[in-house]
Image (cartoon, rainbow, N blue to C red; front, side):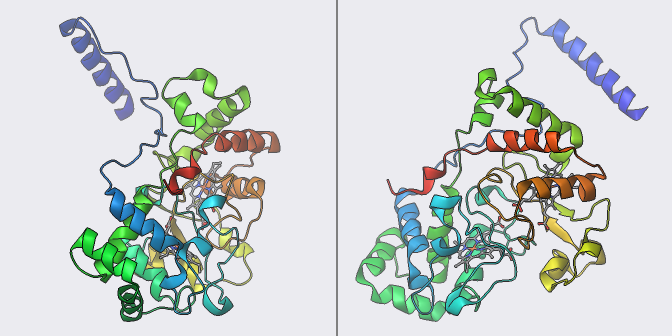
Length: 326
Ligand code: HEC
Ligand code: HEC
């Protein structure tokens, strides 16, 4: 009823507009869709981004010079390591799967449980994590200051030698450049009907009609909200060994309602990056979507529909060469 009233008032408003404004602006292509095209972030300092890129690829960040950001976020392979759990310094196994760094700048917060508010805050996580890079800030800053070209680059760009803020800023600036623009799906949203084939179009329609887009939405097709894994069913009853990481956002807030709640992951590169879920427990995308149907939507999705949805997800993959050196 309320919805009906709302629709009528919108309709009347539109009528009034039509009467008072003789030439109405055309509705822009893609308006009203739950997904938005990716747009490159403007105004990034190219010098800082180049320094950040160098740091991203440099194992100097790890205590023993063995691991770089690239080790776990391989930019030539979708920005992740394709392992259920990453391998850090001295072969240590992390607690969760490495998400892609592509488009991470668009996330509402970083990490599966959102414990880092910004990309800058995020950097400290891997650098000092004993299971990832095993460094300390004083140790890393000493190593950077002792490398003449790094010391000079920081002085030139930041006016002083390397410190925690400038290292984090440079890396975050580089990451903000990792937006995978120009996917075929984005061309379709922007009005090119032929950018998608029939199956991809059908897959997008199913993605909307099943309700996937109620959680995986916006330009990043995810990354903009937190939701419980097991929204409509007990996903966790299936798992034999629960870990602390499985508690998700509960580990950040301590609130009972945040148990098993995770940042909804971006699906922009879902066809490129597996295995799936925060624990990397599901190797196949088909199975991940089947489980989403069952535990997030309370529906059994037939295989044919799953394959159409996967065809659509493939069309979301844009330019992953954005992290390449100029
Ligand atoms: C040993 C492997 C490893 C290394 C090295 C590593 N990461 Fe990660 N990264 C991960 C894992 C695992 C996660 C997920 C952790 C979590 O959510 O608790 C992650 C999460 C992230 C995220 C959050 C993405 C999102 O969608 O939430 C960003 C951004 C990121 N890493 C950037 C970096 C940068 C920059 C470096 C280098 C300074 C780096 N990582 C080094 C494994 C690694
Ligand atoms: C109620 C919210 C919600 C709905 C609806 C939903 N998802 Fe998800 N999805 C999530 C959350 C939360 C996760 C992360 C779960 C985890 O890893 O713990 C996720 C994870 C995924 C993943 C794994 C991504 C990765 O990188 O690991 C895929 C693929 C996926 N969803 C696809 C879909 C599809 C397709 C639909 C519709 C059939 C759908 N989802 C419906 C919330 C939702």
